[in-house]
Image (cartoon, rainbow, N blue to C red; front, side, top):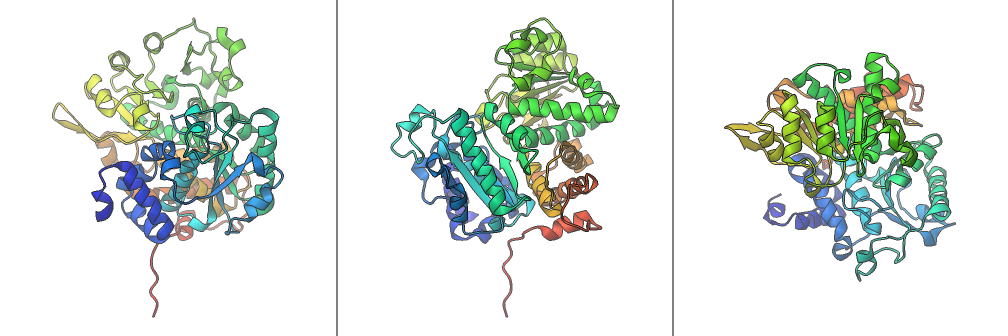
Length: 496
């Protein structure tokens, strides 16, 4: 840690950590677990974003498996080249929508590698059971195609049938090689592919999309926790989203599900309390014809509204959620409007990395005169305002997916069901203590993350058993203890 702290530039710390992971895996995880709050922003957002942008020039050793169009027809052989046989979790990307940074092609590999190191550090999955994969179908990023250090195929992205066939072969090969119970996490695919892939394979494989489902679960947990500060139930609130992509519609759907479960009313009714704004304005029923499939459930009766500020003023939401990938879109006017009709406006600026955040913690607290309940996707330092210190929460998927994955693996789940996501949200919300609330936090601190992950895993596994989707039988009597006993811990053994 002393050596790492000498580096002033975050990217240098990232490179030092990656070198350590290659050289001494156990020490890498020991460091990460013991210093999780300090090192999480180094191995994951925001630093991993910059690392992906510069991946070609900092590339030293390949981590994970690259499968390109050239391997079509031979994917099973390629997977068999990986030395580990017992794989439990695969994180796969095609690099088309890396964080809020766009198409980084093959250089998106930094994301599966980073995600899986968190599966181990925060969720206790064995490093040898994790496999990062990048599917290289080219890139539409002109700058990368012209870059001499770009590591992927130098061609425009394959689409349509060619793309679908490659993915299909990949999914079959994974099942053939690693069996039914391997968890395949889709990561940073573009909207047009993400929904299709999740829909298509959720019936035949154990698949999870962290951008759609993980984000939704972590945000729902924050909302459930924030009700302790603002009062009422989910059904008493009105939600407005800026951004109607994977994250936005995923979160909206999970909120509607939980609301429907609590109020026993049909999900269609619950959706009416949730409004979304995309790049063309408020999603309303007069736009139905031109909307993508995944946006249609959110087209409600209302006159068209172009700007976010006008939507805020007409709809008067109690909760404002940003998942647009566009920085500084929650302007002073927007935040002040939220504060004018809410005693405690809930403002979640979720876009990553920090540069893409809809507003900073300081802006949210200052513009709302210290009344906002704020959380962001990437971390912000504490804020001093009027002599009081505000600590903002981080709505980071790293709270959910490691524990969620552990719960699926330890129960031998064969499919993911939305009730498991709700169980994960409820488990996370229940970990927020009174002391956290007093600081204005709606998420527990990351220092306890392994304990939190064990609780999430236990709740998720319980749901897997209840739904009859578990293959690890009989059901353990104490799931929290069982989760803790399954977790990998990087300790050196004593030899006599």
